[in-house]
Image 1: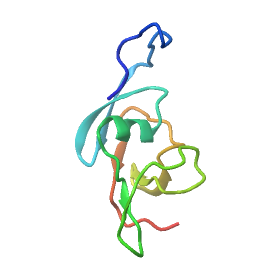
Image 2 (image 1 turned 120 degrees about the horizontal axis):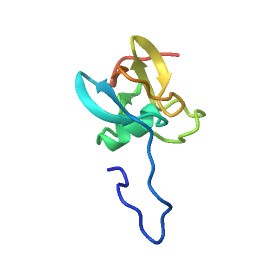
Image 3 (image 1 turned 45 degrees about the horizontal axis):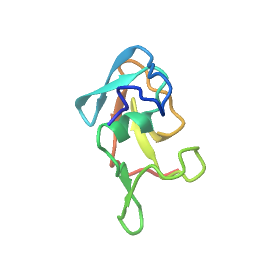
Length: 101
């Protein structure tokens, strides 16, 4: 899902170094400089958790850390905002956990 080529309408595509991460136990492509939300989105994961009360799916909404809809577990730390967390080599990301603030 990432833009891979440039066009007359887009600037030159440049990325950081490729880094290995796992999402729900599966290896996923990631690049330095991306957020966890970007990695999830490009891997096709749009529902990252379910709401506590209604069990409705929740995903990336505001993209700037205000709404808290994108909470995931990163390296065992619960309730991490995916949209604000930069990806790091070896990161373990888990979605659909029971998360509370």
